[in-house]
Length: 483
Image (cartoon, rainbow, N blue to C red; front, side, top):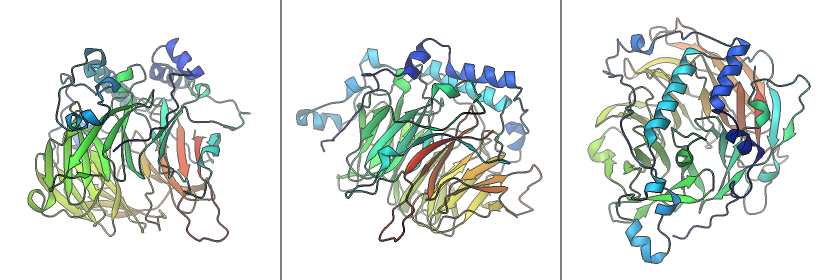
């Protein structure tokens, strides 16, 4: 299928931000130095190794291997034209040495960043309302063809840019404004409008997007993200130029190309996992084309059923994957099925805690928000109350790096914040009430994303409104200072 790709290239017009990067050391180094000057140092409350000694799931906690070298396809490896369509659908080797990715260095850098953030945390302050910094609304004005609401937002792993898909079949990337690098804002700072640095058009309604987990602005080959859309295969896009790098085509039982509903990088980025109806298919990242493995629920995972809506990998144990379905199921899988959980409604998002011993899940058309204890699989640790999600649309939540707080959007235009104490155990089976609710929009807040190195909250808002009178529409992306 030919793709209509409207691309605003970031290379054609270097931004002030990009010029600043070239003259500085690593962005994260600058951020951490400023945080240390402010004295924002917090010790880690629990050692992940201590927390997993009791596990009955036998979580063999091992660090991600730094000796695995693989390549991410570059634009030069993508076949063009109908004459090469058949060739690109087959598994092939990437031989372009200029585009080869040596991920050892980037993985070492990211692992060091994670270790440094684990040992020194800043805290979000929700006792006062977050301060509005930047707003993007002009790009999301509704027209007759589509309502153009946003569909969540995701900070890149290195924190330099924000990815936002929307109803107009486009994905926009916003750069972190250079004024925020210092970790300080003037008291008289007034909010301002900002525009996307890059726009990429997909061929259909966008279902899911995902950053490469070791994305770093210093290594252009790692600056990429996945997307899956209606009636299209999974695409790997260049986050700098907007060019299509690779296509991953999933073939069903009758050898027809099938569109994926969810996608995720797994096994330190070496594999791409995609969710379908009653199946999960996996690809080799550096071999675009046909899938390498199929997991059929009927034969390989009998207790799972339905459309796979989300896929997540355990951050401590690579290869341990959780996926949720719209048929009220959550499954854990590692080289075979481990266990399944049942929920009250269709699952829209699952997330592991940074220690890897907890799994959070939310559903559509309901306020259910659960925390599962993976040390005793199937055991509920607590229920988070107060989340409003009376819609079929995904309403995202985010966890702070220290696992102390969770922030979720809501259809009522508020963000809900929960704070955890250290004495919560599975025996308590507590209902955890929100610490606070803060109104940030007059419309549904469908996406929230917390920056890993700065107290910046990104929100995306808007929803589908069919024949609704007196609509309070607010299709926008906003950055907030929460400290």
